[in-house]
Length: 415
Image (tube, rainbow, N blue to C red):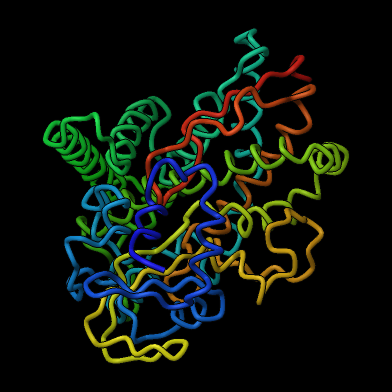
């Protein structure tokens, strides 16, 4: 295998189906050439490294090669704020614990489940909007459903006033666009647009944090803004802003792809779609299998080694750049039987779709619930849905892989 294989993985021509390339990549579980990254593509090796404290997520530990083809396909990562996602312990652990207090167990065990009714209402409203548009012969499920849904949810979670939600949508659009490589765009103009959006978002959040400190509510931003006791203390305003921006950007982008990849897969497997229509409870195993079969995050580039380590018989020296191909590990035949088959009845499904270890997806409970509600209601309400383009047009981004549009036709929308 050669570096040409890595370039093919990020080549847009292979975006619609990168899985044959991953199959070839797995023949060399740890691939490395002279100045590129160490690329790990098999399940057990990836799982081990995700739990290995000798692997760093802090970009300050990187010794990147300018010719790293996987990094060149990642888009403008500077658009993502430097939050706990890109820190190592103990800083990572402190910020993640503080963020988790108003979000999940043990302090807020019912937060996500208590949003179920509100999420269902948002889903219903978006599908009602599709029906009101009166053009079931051509629906773009990304633009009309899976894109607006998660950002609305995050606004509600943070406590953004309803009248300000359109502004959040605009910032999310601009910053998300900056993550996708675009050979036709002016790099300077694109970078300035993203930077301006980040500044506007940061200023807005700073004002909201100050307002919540004076008049706290039940929302997550209020709970982060109010001083807390205990060894972890409270976040600074800058830390709260960065964390809120992470929830907006990272949480939104991955959930959009999960829902869109999910509908695309169900439309390609009409027998599973029919089963879901008849039994909404099937949405739980369907989403888990989707996270294995078509994960919204395909690879984790830009990790680094804090010391020499050995993986699958290969010595990776201290300071080396490591890329973990999660989507390849999810289709490793040494771990999953018939890995290229979409099978929601699969019994053992410990996938890598939400990562693992200390950097496992923070918003996983919410993303799962959003996808379950979205897919089950789309299956129930769209009459005879069918793809208009297969494959659909994909985003440029090789890391956050998903269709940019999903043109679908149906015979109508049930009430």
